[in-house]
Every structure is written in C-alpha cells, then in structure tokens.
Amino acid sequence: MFITLEGIEGSGKTTQIKTMAQWLTAAGRDCLTTREPGGTPIGGQIRSVLLHPDNSDLTPTAELLLYVADRVQHLETVVRPALAAGKVVVCDRYFDATLVYQGYARGLDKDMIRQLHQLACEGLTPDLTLLLDLDPEAGLARAWRRIDSDTAHEMESRFEKEKLLFHQRVRAGYLDLARREPRRFAIIDATADMRVVRAQIESTLEAYFKRRPSTIE
Ligand code: TMP
Image (cartoon, rainbow, N blue to C red; front, side, top):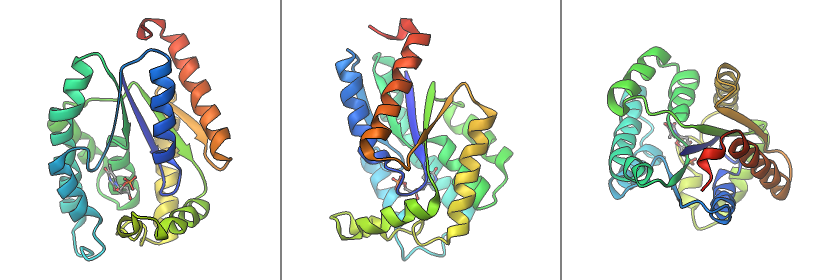
C-alpha cells in the first residue's frame, strides 16, 4: 500500500508523517516512511540543486526533469522494492506535488507532466493521498518561524522565496486535484493544533482500512 502526504510549505507534513508511522506500526503494519525530493543518496544531491537559493536561474523544464529524475531513482531503489516486500510506504510528497508546483503554479503543461509520469514512473499512483490543507499565509508564517532551526538552509529554499500568489496557486491546484479524485484524496484541515490534525489523520486511516479490510494483517 502506497500512501502520500501533500500540502503547501508549513502544512506540518514532516511532523505528521512520524506519528502516522507510529499509528501504522501499532496497527500491525510494516511501514516505511520516505520523501521526495531526497529519499535516496542521489536524490539528496538532486534536492540540494532544486532547493538551493542560488539556483534562481533553473528553468521550469529543467526543474521538472530534476524532480522526475529524483522520483525515478526513488521509485526504483526504495519505493517499489518496499511495496513488493508488502510494506506500507508513506511518502512525504510525490507526483501530485509535481502537477501542482510545476503545472498549476509554474504553468507547465499538465498533460505533458502526466505523460512524463506515465513514461518514467509507469504512472504509479498512490492508494491514498492525505492533503494537509491550510491558508498559504498561515503556512508560510509557520515555515519562516522554522528558519532558526537546524534546517535553516532549506527554510530559505527557492520555493519559500516564491511570492504568496505562487503558494495560493499551489493550494488551489491541490484542492482541484482532490476534487477530481475524491476517492484517493482525503483533505485534512491543517490549520488546527497538531494533535487535532493528528486525530483527523488517524480517523482517516481507520476509515480507509475499514473500507479495505484485506489491507490489515
Ligand atoms: P519539502 O519542503 O516538502 O520537502 O519539499 C521541497 C520543495 O519541493 C517544496 O517547496 C515543494 C517542491 N516540490 C516541487 O516543486 N515539485 C515536486 O515534484 C516535489 C516532490 C516537490
């Protein structure tokens, strides 16, 4: 089973993925958490290129192809082997992020992005996608508050430097994808307190496993 977490900057994915893993483990599932970009050593190098604030002249298409390169490496060496071994894979961002950031927000052709995904990743689609939704102003305020932490470099990434309008397009893009695929997406209200968000995620997972009892060991 393949679960993905999506949302704008500051939506709290990184915190929630840890508690999701605990919940899944307690439910008896062998669980692997990972992320894109940067879920492999080579992906880590690609991530640095993608997020480095000095790389402001990276073109949208070059950016797209780097995300896809990171994904192919990640799928082939981490995700597919784990799925084949019967694990639940929980991934912080995946293909929907590419459609939203490079398509809806940067303006690249969404059909071209879908074709590329089909070609490079055989169209592997998550079983369940949790969208942590919140207003970009609130999300960015949270992201900027983390500037002092040990991930300071990433907090000043090219994406955090984008204007509010860019992040509003990202949010609208995610909500549009969720509207188009309501069976795969669950929208989680991420404005709430961390514990409340966690409770929403856990009840979504419970409901999902109830609908698909064969996926519980
Ligand atoms: P993160 O901060 O959630 O790890 O994500 C890194 C940045 O990369 C974030 O600003 C979103 C962006 N991104 C894309 O633009 N396209 C993609 O396909 C992915 C996976 C992430």
